[in-house]
Image (cartoon, rainbow, N blue to C red; front, side, top):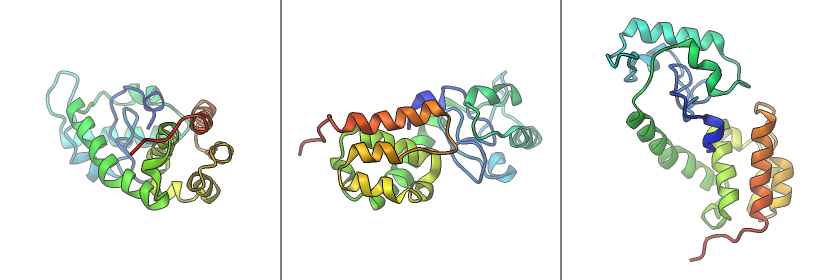
Length: 185
């Protein structure tokens, strides 16, 4: 995942790390599917005190109502004042990466660990943004990656749901992979 797309904004109730059809984690990217999922998270107020269930519900509803998939994390900051602890965000991201995204990418690209670093970064960003199932909807991209054809991968990675700058970054990562050696054993 590319932090420049996710920003350092704290995730808001609805878009915490990738759930349902809500925005991807604005802070690091993770969706909160519904109010019940939001209620289970350790949100706090700006004064540091724990948010109540009613406050979490109201925040989730406000972010959900404001949702626009083409907006960046900064767009949602004024929608809710609730925040998550940075340690929780780091742990959540690490867990999702290790347990969901990397195993899923490796199922789609069995030689993923041998890909050049820029290609791996691009694929992780796409999986984080789309989910592994969404990444699987790019068969030409995956075929190009599995064949080590990074120029073709660059041509096949456009996401209609992303800002142009993020798509350009992803494409450039695949182009860079063409001249970057993969990891050595």
